[in-house]
Image (cartoon, rainbow, N blue to C red; front, side, top):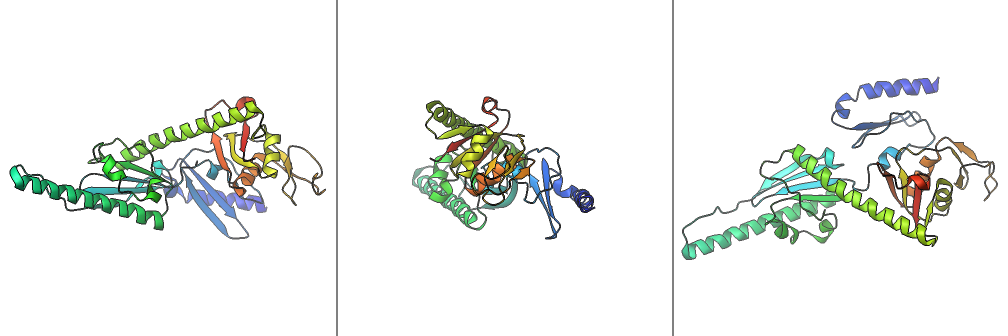
Length: 316
């Protein structure tokens, strides 16, 4: 009866979230009856349809958001700046825009023209300092993990030299090559998604190359296959966990010390009776996040197939 009531409430809650879900690729709904919790979360990527009932939150869809995290995009020209914020490039929304007084161009020539050009150059510099201050202040009050900047090629180095070091750490290393004068929000979303997708792909390539090197050397700095990964997680040695999106497997877990494996009756560490888990991969993700490991769900990549669909780079 409790299960039926929970499912009924979930359906009712989802039906009331049509407006929230509009424009999102997927929606995750967390319900906890004892706490009176009903928390919808909009996702920027598609997920399989499923109802999960467990003693712990099902966090895999949240981890699949990827490491990009909160994104800030700013469009800058010589007078105006537009700042967009979102949990992903696809969810960017305009947050603030502002302009600064900059002298217009004149064509009189002579000393007057030279002074006017210097004044205009100083006005543009002041505008770019204003942009840099806004980005630094925004980082303090509404932290973002990735920064995208759209501007002309000529303006790009002048924008970069004024950014605070903390802001520079979050900057995507290539400017968004879009027409900032009339770019729509959709244009920024598309350009931002393409830029970060390319960056994410390059990072995945780097992780897979490191994995191949360690496995080839047999230097104990990488493991492949679910049993070996589970053991490394129990030992808290995992630096980066890579798995095929959609990977599932039953397993067992010790409720006392957290030991995990695919089969077993009693924990080899403390003798506690092991609990059966329908999806031990989810337990692995929870263990990885608890030890601050990077977690990567790989899509449309065959490299992990021969390795059992999951592997890990180890700290030691």
